[in-house]
Length: 98
Image 1 (cartoon, rainbow, N blue to C red):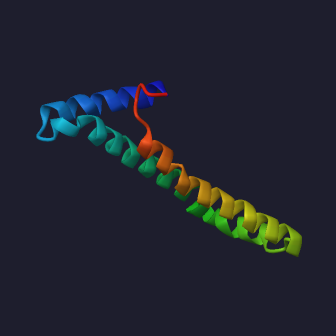
Image 2 (image 1 turned 120 degrees about the horizontal axis):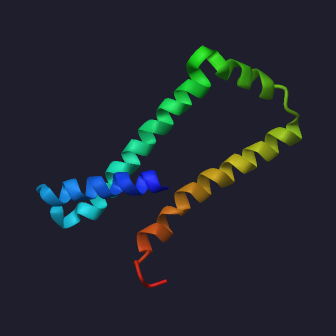
């Protein structure tokens, strides 16, 4: 987290000197999120697509039972829903009020 904090700090300072200094804290957050997303994209490519590892993963799970498939679908659906719902507490969070 120290590295992310430092990157945020540097981006924040850059935005304070630019034309969007009124929202420098948000601009820095957006920049950090984009950078993290790009890093995750590269990691995902290297993990799943490089050397066709995805084929091994697909073949491993194609033989799951009906019960395993339903349970897996439920777990993935819950993960997706929770991921999207977590944006609301972040949107309503007021620093210093908790």
